[in-house]
Amino acid sequence: MSPSAQKGAGAGEVLLAVENVSLRFGGVKALTEVSFDIRKGEIRAIIGPNGAGKTSMLNCINGFYHPSEGRITFKGETRRKMRPHEAARGGIARTFQNVALFKSMSTLDNIMAGRSLKMNTGFFWQLFRHGPAMREEVAHRKVVEDIIDFLQIPHIRRTPVGRLPYGLQKRVELGRALAMEPDLLLLDEPMAGMNLEEKEDMSRFIIEVNQQFGTTIALIEHDMGVVMDLSDRVVVLEYGRKIADGTPDQVKGDPRVIDAYLGVAH
Ligand SMILES: Nc1ncnc2c1ncn2[C@@H]1O[C@H](COP(=O)(O)OP(=O)(O)OP(=O)(O)O)[C@@H](O)[C@H]1O
Image 1 (tube, helix red, strand yellow):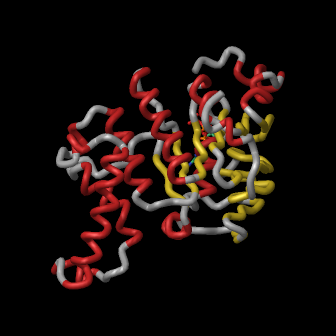
Image 2: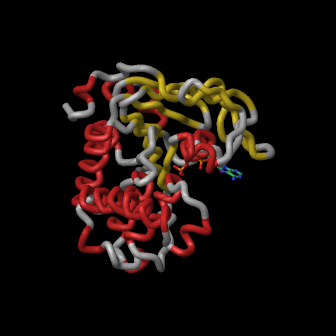
Image 3: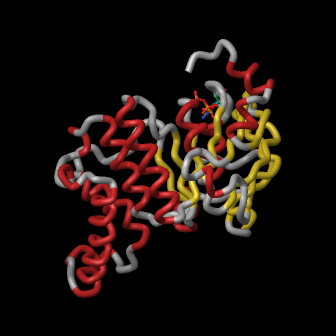
């Protein structure tokens, strides 16, 4: 059993609730009346074949898209519309399917950029790196250095991320999201394009983030071995609808899930 599974699947209070969420793009129904919740402290996977609506769901959760119908409640606050920066300030961080970093900037600066949300001093002080801004920067820098150590990437702290292999770029992107000290971390295909060793490293970091910092994690992943190993609970989408929801063992044996994946190459 995975360490995260030992926590007891589904125990704990609801951190985020998705209720009857539908999302349309013109005639395309990306999501249809989807409901599920994410409980505090768990690792929750969202799976499904290509085009099932997984990324659309993450985009609704962090405010990139606004559901056509339904509602999302995060930390007890219900909303129809929220902007991504409001979601971030509220405690939701995410990584993307295709790494979204500042390629010419160093690892350190990219992770520091993730920290900017936590910075209080205004642009004027930041500009002159003076007084309160200086003191604040030192404190933030310490958090960022700790994240770099935690992710075991001190050797690349000064390297422009565009020069790094893909697996390390994904790790830096995780670092940038962690710099926000989120309550809920959304990971869109964190293992995509990785070799076995990189996947094992990333799995370990995800479990450690969850266990050491208590961060709740929702992830989209196509590698079923990884999903079943890491997750406390799994929600399964197909053609924008939820077809199953439960522990890895429950969804693995669900005939609708088996049907959805039959003949689908992942
Ligand atoms: N911005 C958009 N405009 C129009 N249609 C979209 C848009 N985003 C997603 N869709 C459509 O919504 C449906 C769900 O797409 P989504 O990307 O959420 O699926 P997914 O499960 O994340 O797929 P994948 O595993 O391939 O990443 C698809 O039919 C897709 O073409």
